[in-house]
Length: 204
Image (cartoon, rainbow, N blue to C red; front, side):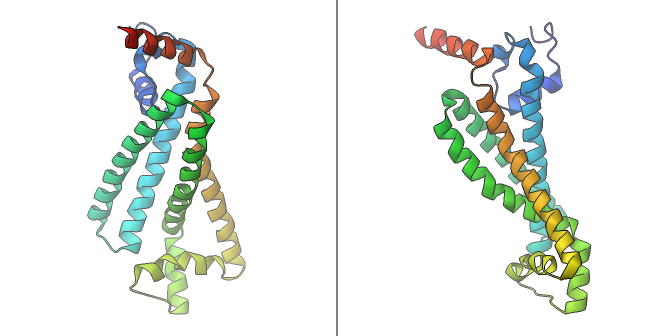
């Protein structure tokens, strides 16, 4: 049935990633692009999180690249399941009372992800800063502060700080947008069909 109404495998994957029921989606063909777009944002967020974990593991904790890559993949998969669970609960209630905690959780997570991405992007500048300021440290907590030190280092530091802020805002938008969009479509034909489907299934 999904093939007859034009739902591609990629769209099915993205809709499933966003927590939408494919059976109910079969009755809402006009929403395929919108819901698959939400799944695309989720996938981008998971890629950003995995890349950030890789940087944390390799550059801050001193893991080997292969171990860091393994950690990034595992945590990315776990976060994917975590988002699926959150989306499932949110689809069930779809209330503002659940949206607010999800957004509050996504904001600090976004800043952690953005810091890891920024650290990886400006790694060469950090190494130059270490060389000229003799600030090398074997402590991961001290290494994690090197980006802050770099951002306060003259005019170049101000430019780097501006870029880091832009990265943080982008990642915050990337991680919070799926929940906002799911809430935005709460009155769509999908949820009307979904509620009828749940009611019919529960009465059997």
